Image (cartoon, rainbow, N blue to C red):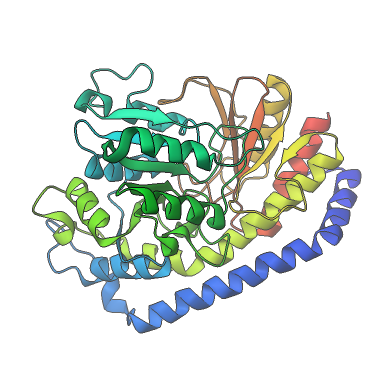
Length: 415
């Protein structure tokens, strides 16, 4: 790997210093794994569920069991987990179009959503593409307070002003491409309780990158739709594609009519041989998420030691797998990604370059030497080429391999 002895020694020093954080992560993994195992046993997971179906997929026992298992693992009333969901953005779109109607207001209480969701809402240059705005859905957003926390009084005031016109209160758990805090389960639960005490709006959460980082999930505290991607935490590095939506029975039912069509909902959908991967991914997910969390702590320690601004800090408790490193220049950001790429099991010889990715406002550089295209639970790093040039790093199927990527990135940036 041509990693310098200086960086290897720094890595060993980091691991010694982070023992308490690593122990906590492994304990969370044990608790979550036991929950998954209990539910697999109670739902009688068996080899017959791995059988592939085609066409309409009528009578797909494995598909139906996975829907139930996903809901139970995340503490929800109902849900579905399907390989036909193309991405996290697609999953969120299914939920939003399922719940919102002309004249409704969608209120984002975590500032602006992730770049790829802006076209869905109708923010920016998305006219003529069927955005929510074109269907008469209005959008409002509330900024974070100066201390980085959700502005509860502003939510109160917005509900008082717009009343029942607010149909969806939207939260994004992770930072996306914003330089902000990640939401904890406790914070999400507090907002959910406030909204439900004031009005009948659905609380919708983009939960990407947050699954299995804490011992409970936000859906267990009343979130109406909790949504995520299977090429992130819950796929465990095993799911080839897919996404999930879980939450209240009513919200899930409405979303299911957008997954397929009104009157059909969850009754159709061929699994095409993906049931085995989805179930295997859920089985691996708590452990693989723990590997990613340990990797994030290690990166925070090393790059903090090298003098870069990192978030979260090396000893902070985490509620998602994303680690940011503020590189300060386009060259620094690109070299960081090249270091990560050089330690990837796939395409290690490739040198990432920034390009105009669909759905993004700025050129994006991305290191993604993964077995699954675009997988964020495998070690990856990316960022928009815009000040202050932040690398957003996540993943690591194994800590042993991911630590090599962190050290390689450190050497590249130092040079």
